[in-house]
Amino acid sequence: MKVLLVNPNYITQVYGEETLDYLVAPLGLSYIAAVLKRDGVDVNLLEANALSLSMDDIEKEIRRQKPDLVGITGTTPLAGRVEEIARRAKSVNKGIKVVVGGPHATILPKEVLKNPDIDFCVCGEGEVTALELVKALDKGSDFNGILGLGFKTNGQVQINGSRPLIKDLDSLPLPARELLPMEKYIFPLPTGKVAQFTNLISSRGCPYLCTFCGQHNIWTRLVRFRSPKNVVDEIQEVKEKYGVSFVGFTDSNFPLNRKITLDICDEILARGIKIKWACGSRVDLVDQELLNKMHQSGCQQINFGVESGNAEILKAYKKGITLEQAKTAIKQAKKAGLKVYTYFMVGGPGETRETAEETIKLAKKLDPDYAQFSVTTPFPGTELFEMSNMGGALGSFNWSQFLTYQAPVFATKNLSATELEELKARAFRSFYFRPSFILKKALQIRSLSDIKVLFKGFRFAIKLGKGKISEPTKSASKTT
Image (cartoon, rainbow, N blue to C red):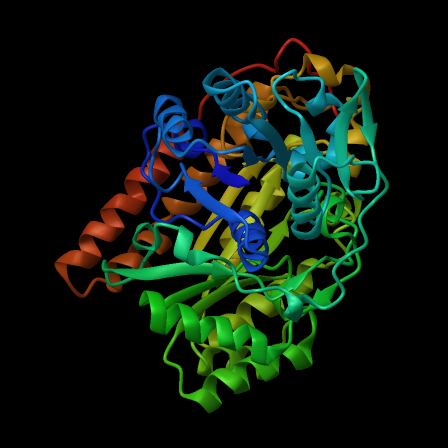
């Protein structure tokens, strides 16, 4: 059986004509491809995103490669694109089986399977389910015993029981990066140069209860860790095999297990691997000793989700952090020599113009190197979605509009969509056009490349500061 895995092109949808500074590899598909390859399956991976492929390009590739099975991954905003790829596959050959996985298919498998062009859904962790599906199709056997699989039988949608989690993540082969256009993954350095980049993950799962996050639908709240040796083996491979010099950990919270984090750092240092890396963390997971060791082993940047400058909004998000912890963590990260990126949202439960202004004020007071502001979006599968009473209108949503970086599609009780967009735009203007921030960046200029990087950054900030005003879609209603 010949399998083609497809990562949709999302750049133009999410960012319009704006060119991304860096791309992340589709690790989920890469792991599935590696598992299939290990079992002798003829598998290829079409990275339509990194290659900027149009729908016509994707259709041509399907026609050229003649797969028996096309597997597509997709988040909620990409649901429409996933459906279009499925339609294109069936137009090439109605006999092609189409399977969809990823967050959206996991959360809403029955809705996804209503599409006549989609034959199967993989719900949750996909490696074992995908392999069992390929084997069943190859043998012509039924699908009733394949856990984590959704399919149609006699015109009816059937969702099998949940797939048990993979306990030993070290048992998985490393992602099949040989199937990816690795030269396309680059990361912008402060010098203006770019580094060969890849993303990797050292754990799966998150124990926290944030109401806006739906990652637990895929990984659950049970956290599983790879061994430090296994993680550093992958770092060594990507450096030696693909020339990667910058690695981004995309774990929900990389330093969740302090000992494992320290052991990873020690393993990098013990092997003498010269690698730069970045990660994301909660503000309550780090301390000065840990941050110092991370920097010593090559960490250049840490990303913190602060979310709001108002304690009650944070409580409504069930974030479980305090503003004081945010201040301490950022101060310690700077002291360790790390660049600090922070994430904030406006439009949460109970948000008012006054509480949103508190968030803007806090962002400036914390003074991170960069700050990202977005509008809180209640994605399906999150507690926030249920709080918003959106569940009864699933079929009427235009999922492509569920983008935190574009104009909001929801309003709150206190703020219209237009007001939310204005507040987001004001946050960008207020943060990036402070005289103190501009002066700080100007003093960091050491070359013509620095000027180019600074100019590009401010041009992007201007664009975001202008905002894109719109009202909610017809089906959207107010959040709590």
